[in-house]
Image 1 (cartoon, one colour):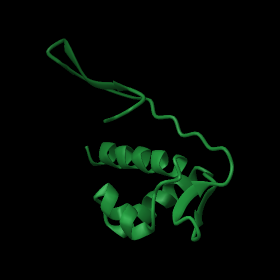
Image 2 (tube, rainbow, N blue to C red; image 1 turned 30 degrees about the vertical axis):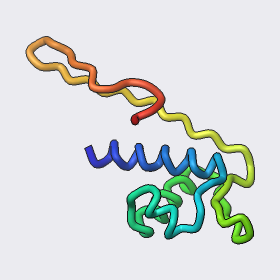
Image 3 (spheres, helix red, strand yellow; image 1 turned 120 degrees about the vertical axis):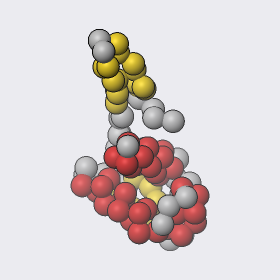
Image 4 (cartoon, rainbow, N blue to C red; image 1 turned 180 degrees about the vertical axis):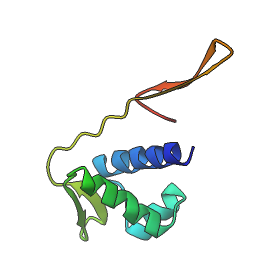
Length: 94
């Protein structure tokens, strides 16, 4: 389930960047309940997806310098004794 938590954190970071309300890196880490290193790792993942992530020192926020969309669609179901249990499905993992 660690990968799912990473995706949840990535989505949360994306939404904060999109709204341009991240704050400074240390404040962002506290807000997301992560270490600063984890936040930087998530930013690197976004950059691996060619996300145009920038930081404004004047506004003290991360932002996208060009349009960028990150769409999550994840489904997880478990089949046990021919019975299917759907754990979650959809665009958001919350």
